Image 1 (spheres, rainbow, N blue to C red):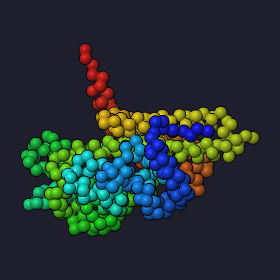
Image 2: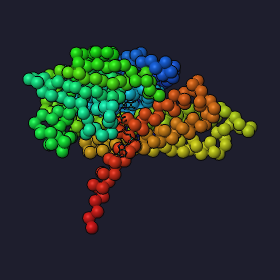
Image 3: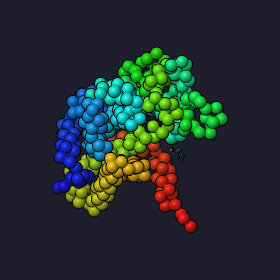
Image 4: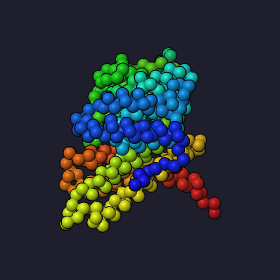
Length: 404
Ligand SMILES: Cc1cc2nc3c(=O)[nH]c(=O)nc-3n(C[C@H](O)[C@H](O)[C@H](O)COP(=O)(O)OP(=O)(O)OC[C@H]3O[C@@H](n4cnc5c(N)ncnc54)[C@H](O)[C@@H]3O)c2cc1C
């Protein structure tokens, strides 16, 4: 049988990378994922394996020791990894976004300092926009940086920091009203934000003077990977750790990072949906009711048909969004659509696979139980469905402006 979600037109190198990752996922991730997830255990051995494969440097340019691969190659690897365990793709994702931010917006000194170590996985990235009082409304950020001599002093509380404990370099978005009067800053909040590159020790507690990572947030799913708060209380950051060297650009830098992150979340949705389909189609041929396999009941076959169609459609949109970015074109519309569709379809495919499992889907012994708790995260991360629809809607009105 031809597998679902094939990608045509890949180079030999892309095919080799993706099939190596797929083998790794089948051998090293799938057999242990559910057990580690139930224990909420960090998958150190898997992370070490990914380091060896060079995945932390996949999109980092070769001149900095990375593999210099495209967004498409990256997204296809993420799809494979999420098929094995979504949390592992989360470990790579924030690292990838910070490396992308440095590549696109960093000063030469910042690139030279961080990218080679990031390519090896020695420096590990996380990014922090959300606060207890906001997520979607990034412009409402209240954490603040104030300049004192050659340094900035940062204060405020951040929320939902994926890899908050394990990372050693956090891109933190804060308000810095420098050069703006309070009324100007209020009128253009996007222009008074700055991204700081905050180096820290891994772990919990006070990881640098003025910076505390309190502990892991207990989550419904997406376990194994640490998600934390981040508290800045008089945190001093030198001026040369302002991303790109100039204040006031942080909002636009972060939005650029989140845009490639959306392709990545779409890829995660594709991977989880593929796994759910695999589990559903297998179980449907094992379970018998009323004298035949449940797969032979038309209602179940229809479910499988719908699931497979969704897997194909989501994959095609995700690949299209990645290719558009790789060609140098603006891809916010395609990335928003791919993220929206892939995350919604993922949730639906997982639910259908769960229903096919009958009562056993409710048992922790079956992998689908884990997927059922993981899929909802994709509806939220990197912008909720409502935010994607706002982006899509605005872009459509730009493209289809009524000229009457
Ligand atoms: C496991 C996990 C990991 C995360 N990791 C990170 C991370 O690494 N870094 C980081 O910065 N953040 C991270 N986040 C935060 C995430 O980006 C936010 O949760 C998300 O953006 C939504 O923000 P919110 O939770 O504040 O919801 P809100 O913004 O409060 O939204 C609540 C509801 O209102 C809807 N809504 C909001 N505004 C509108 C509007 N204008 N029109 C219509 N509906 C609207 C939303 O769609 C949602 O349904 C993570 C979150 C989770 C759960």
